[in-house]
Image (cartoon, rainbow, N blue to C red; front, side, top):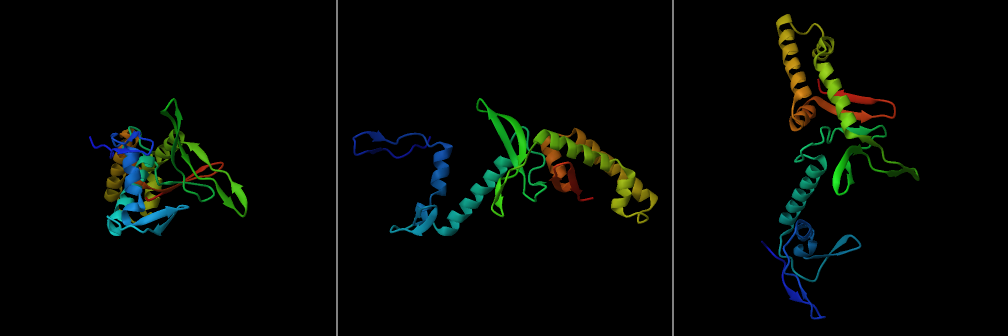
Amino acid sequence: GIRSQERIARSGNALGGMKLVKGAVYHILKSRTYVGEVMHNSKAFPGEHHGIVDPDTFEQAQQMLKGNAVARRAGEHAASPSLLAFLVWDGLGRRMTPDHSCKKGKKYHRYYASQRETRDGQIVAAWRVPALDLEEVVVGAITHRLRDPDALRDAAGRGSKDVATLRLMFDRAAVLASELAAGAALEQRRMLARLVQRVIVHVDRVEIMVRF
């Protein structure tokens, strides 16, 4: 595998020569040294050296890294992906993103959590809800709505469909409901992204805004 450059420190000790792990590669890809800049107090300034990577290529790499980070938080590649990633907000208007607690180095519980913030000089605590409980509520509500003829008629506009068209719509909705209720987690996630506009977690209730 690829190893870091070997060098001798002033003390005479040998440094480097180790395999590059993920964290080291990430650090290299994030370093603005390669575009001719230096960092000070988290701000970038022009350096005295010439960059070896053009700025456009560097920024493209940063966007890819950000995309990968979002995918990891959303659990897109996990065995149990977060079904409601990018859909959940708390009652104060803050986005709630997938999070988890660890026990002995392993993911233990999944949550959707907002971030603590300061409003009008006051600290507003973060909100956190168990992911599985929220997902069960949303999947159950959407499945019920897909099987509710009155709700489907309202969504289509009462009086705007003939009997044959309504029957076809009901049949398709029933199939969607069955697939959502029994589908694999990743497929459930994709379906919810198409069917749900937003999930708002209030103190005393869950509000679900649908696309149908």
